[in-house]
Amino acid sequence: MKICITVDLDNYQDYQSLVDPESGSTARSFYLDAIPRYLDLFDRFGIRATFFMIGRDGAPAAHRKLVREISDRGHEVGNHSYTHPYNFRKLSRTEKEIEIDQADAAISDILGKRPVGFRTPSCDVDSETLGLLAERGYLYDSSVFPTPLMWVFMLYGKLFLRNANYQLGHLATALAPAIPYSPSLRRVHRRRKEGDGQAPQVLEIPFSVIPILRLPFYSTLLRRFGTGFFSFLTRAYGRRRPVLHAVFHLIELADFEHTSLGRAFERTPGLAVSLSGRQRFVSHAIETLAAAGEAVPLHELARSYLGELKGRTSE
Image 1 (cartoon, rainbow, N blue to C red):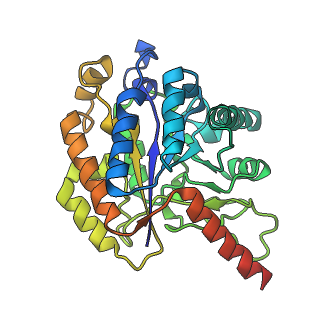
Image 2: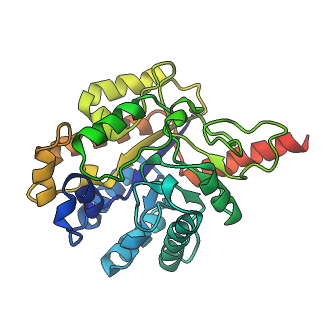
């Protein structure tokens, strides 16, 4: 079984805009402490992962150095938009193009090579976005969150978060396939079928979920249940499935407890967890996943799947 671990590099200001948008704080960054912690964990357990970077954060010299280190240590850097807008589906076509292209340019400027994978902010993807990625030669998108729990997360956002633009993808994607698939031209949550016409030529790599219950391998949620439950969930998933894709965020290894964000989290149900508690959970989760199969970055998985799909169509 292939293990794919992805880390979204959402930064301090992205969370601040959700829980305390009036603060306008953009000076702090999670990069300097959290990225080295992830890299050291991945080295310890022999993991090659994929980091999804927001292009805006590629300007500071210290950030650029860390992004190069991510690549130099064998990991992939994917495109996570330029400014991380929380309503990506509602952007105009031109606005989507700007978000994709400016982030692409920022990553290319740092690494000397273009990204081949994309993830929308908050899983808010649509067919138009997949078409734009296909036009630009991207191999894959990884934005589909195939679980009805996304409806619960959306309700949570409406009740407790303070950003009016907060979205979490189209509700229909809760019923999307839970393994990599070639998406339909008109409905991102459905597989491409013969006769669909010129569907977007990008692979969709959704977040993995437990069958039937559709409980996702999404660290922000699963740490609420503890390390034992994560181990149980990984065993229950089984080794016969082709891929297990687990999603983490930079904030999980960031120290923000004595900041305005930390104080806002303390007032927000479900978000107040100490750094030491988050570190224990993430370390256990990474170790558990490393023991479950071969860890590969998403671009390797995508090339393998796309090669198989091409072989089938040429038969």
